Image (tube, rainbow, N blue to C red; front, top):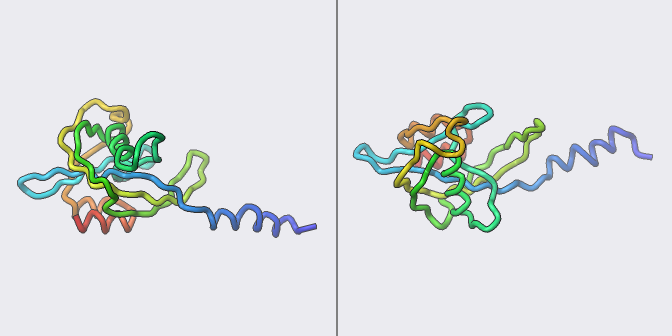
Amino acid sequence: MMHPIKRAWSDVIMPLFKRPKQIQVAALCYRDTEDGKRVLLITSRDTGRWIVPKGWPIDGLDGPGAALQEAWEEAGVTEADIESAPMGIYEYDKRLTEGLTVPVRAQVYLTRVRDLSTEYPEASERKRAWFSPKEASTLVDEPDLKAILYAL
């Protein structure tokens, strides 16, 4: 019979360290202005920190399509041109409602915004604002996302 602590380590704790990263899609929304590119950031619903619109893949949509759907629901993007291939990837630990975290790899799609709506599904749950890419890079927490924004 295996000792309970050894069994917990091998059956519960070790598998947590070996979990594969989950995939999300993100829309790096921007617009060109006279002062250069501006990046649209939104706040997360749980902590209020600045992030880009992102979410889980959606059945029936490819990566860019799902990223556009998230940009609509979370930021009110109604018209945009999105690149067909990810322009970068960043990783982070997503907090779940149960208090657990899962490792996530977010594929980032560059999205040129043509129109925004003031009414969208999560308007009452989030703030949104435009920033220079360099300023946006100082506001997000994820190191790889910081680098993507800074390089834009």
